[in-house]
Length: 442
Image (tube, rainbow, N blue to C red):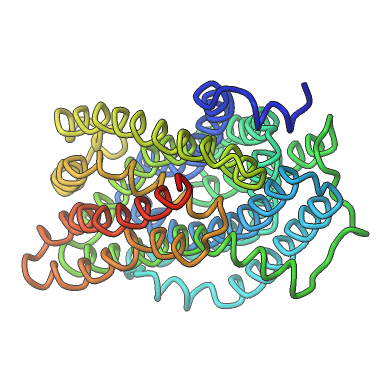
């Protein structure tokens, strides 16, 4: 049975689990990239932890552009493979990869030219400015490889080659985890060592994934297939803009969160909220990985007019995603101080972080419905609805919350802002899901 037949005829739960396990691992690896630096620089100082947390918003923008190109090209090529149009899928794969490299180089150059100004925009204080600029400059140099690896990773997933995608990211993660303690603690390079470890791992992932994309039935990336024309760019925008909104607004929300926390509680509050952000990012990475295992199933079967399988996959992922989040939420509610303390053993940091983690955990189980609805809408080409649902949690609702609640309740408002946004987001996602599921059923 060839790949297309497997995607269209394998039982949906079995197929999603087969694709989602390596994808979950891939997403957790991405989370580890972003969390490892926080853990190891936490052995240095609260200011270093805060600096790494501040640059996370810049890293999120780079990742957002990578997911934009990767999901935009991946969704389209999966639908074309589902309908048997292989040459069109090949052209889209090469175009999405080329676009990512162009944007990555532009970000690396412009970011380093204006690094100090950007550090001020993202909330660096006089005590964190030097570390923030140093860490950010190095991270920006790796932007082309970071974006390139995300594009290839997502294109492999949408072709059904989730294992190749996982292996590529795992190789980079191992390098990152080895280099972090070596450069930060043994060589005494501080935040510079953390940044070098991160981009070193991303470069290795980029190389491994590029080689993996040329194996088996996978689409080959060729310069001759690049088509930077209106048709392909529009399709990338339609399929990738929800990911850009989701990841990009995460960067904006992190920036506003850091500014609000810093203005009220100083470096300790920034560090505490940064740790909570990383913890919740690891949890959501597992959930998103599960949903991304559903996406190629959704795209393939929607393109082949097997909409009953699209519906079945949605309900399967929503149910088990919610059960998973209930278990994680229970752990976070029971052990918030211990979880925060594992990253930074500072009483002020722990005090801020444990409260925020508790509040966010209370609303965590609602996230599964919002994420799976967004995944489904994005995969079937409903770009506008998918953009709205992807913007809800970190944009439409969070931004007003983080601007308003701290003014009313001080640091408590900072700590509850994300939980309030999560509750409001579910009210937006459910009507969109119901309307599309009813349409597919009829």
